[in-house]
Image (tube, rainbow over all chains, first blue to last red; front, side, top):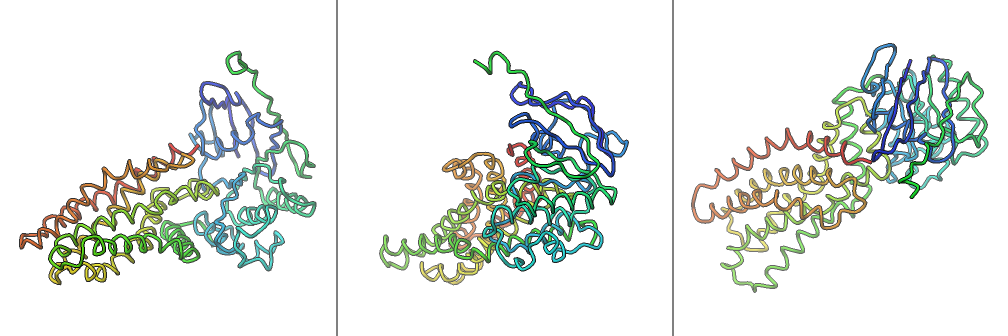
Length: 210
Length: 227
């Protein structure tokens, strides 16, 4: 589905990651692991098109492209992207208006399937960090996108939440979707067909060490 | 239940902003309250002499409207940048400029339109002659959207800064000056019995230009400014 060649990103002339070569196929997940600060989040943001890559080639379904098509990707980052003053259901309705809606899904059923039934009208600002994460997962469920870009999807979740992420991932991959997941390895890996990409810290240059 | 269309995305954006404005209606009405306070101070400072107040009225109301439109501008895009909504808007399969245009329109609807509605009252407060009310309302109706468009573009430029503080007004005011000159000028011209429609038409021309360019410029600015 997605193939990347010699992808590299520089910030202020310092290499953040790369050059990287990897591919993500339909029905499988790519786990991006590595310690803090090795550029996992940056890699995801580059793939989402929020940052411009320094160099490298992307291809989407075999076609070379400069950035991935926005309708093909769903991104869940560290910032939840909910409005604190809007109810959970209103937040999801807005997301479907903006990103479209997966066939057969509805905001109400998505809320129920992430365990937030009964919280429809509660403003997102009054949900706990874990519940906000679940709300992001509900948005993911509604998205018609084939490729999920998940930045630390397990963070802030309780044991049930971690099982929930695994279940959602398994279902998405079964429906021929794909996912790119960053994790620092402190949580169990999802029980799906997955490959691992290990990012390593860049060599510290003399001037940045000084 | 399918792919997002431009009208549907625009409607969702507009509905979200109006709903947000309603849930924070106290904050939303602040610019209006501010403008009313500014205008109410003029009779206190200048005394209640009819002719003097009437002469100052167009300028005073226009300055109040201009200062009020600076309120809330700083948070317009920054609040979305801070909670990650802006990221999601960038990633939506619809043009960012369309979404920003909807946000600017919602900002005008909630910030400036109430002020125009209450402007006849402000005019009464300053003894503005009745025949000047039409030029005043018309110039505000054409001028305030232009202020919002210009101000939002500047706000988009400063979205990457943690706090813009005085920077936003400093950047926006030079762009606001021509709008103020022609807006207040049209009412002044009407007061002197001259043709006032010319200045309003010039504002309308500026508005047309800004309607097309401001959302595009703001979208480009946000793409650059977002870290």
